[in-house]
Image (cartoon, rainbow, N blue to C red):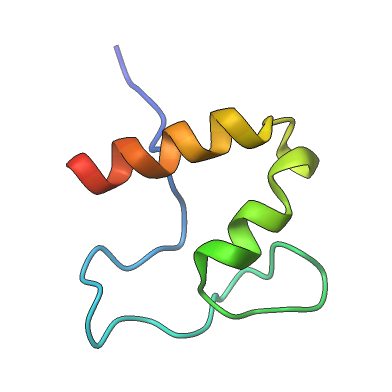
Length: 61
């Protein structure tokens, strides 16, 4: 069974890493930051707690 990735359009290597997303997720800010991702969590029907849980899961991998 296939499973969706926890994240899309993110560079798995943090440094130097990607600084801008090729797919803008908040309609105006294309910076590749957790702040931008967390700011649009509700748009993707994620609660703040769920978004934090996903970020935590990504950090543990």
